Image (cartoon, rainbow, N blue to C red; front, side, top):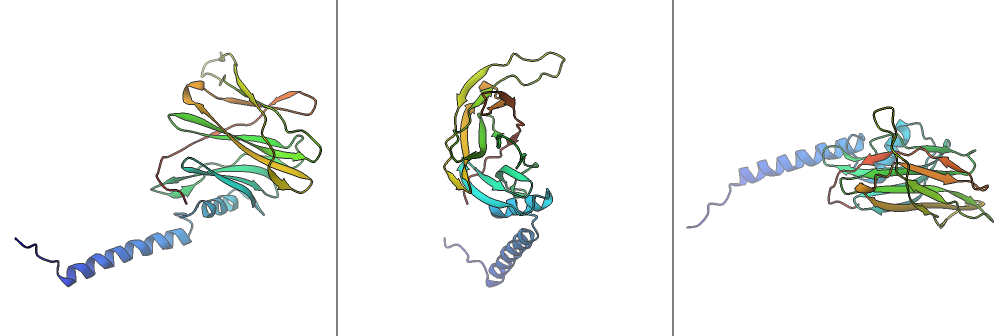
Length: 211
């Protein structure tokens, strides 16, 4: 039995609906409501959080998210951009900005899924100086007045490989299983003293797209 071919009018209606959907997607992308590229989402969020004169120094993939190392008038920061089918590419929260007058100039950011926590260490090393060492630790505060004992997972030393004026930048990625309970990042200065860095973890939505 031969199948009846759809009438031309039905095909035209289907094409109109497809054209309408594509037009709405394009309009929302232009208006910034549904960024189609990670770099577009970064540009929108930089304006939203007053990160003027943002310049992308380096970018890399970490699974399904795009990681940007950026410099702005306010300082150096790392942006974690992931894809959500409802909202497009998005950063989801204000980046942690390290002011230019910080010594040493270093920071930490992160993301998490049910399976693992990703730690992004970034900073700048002047010419002639050694790269800093970081301590990855557990011990997030509990809801009560007691605290978990702090345990060191490991110490890592990023390699500055991104050329800059008067030195080199770095953006290093480290992965840990969710069971490791990574919660605190300490950075070491030139005198060997440890300091607790601000650290947040962005939730990541899995989506099979790499742009």
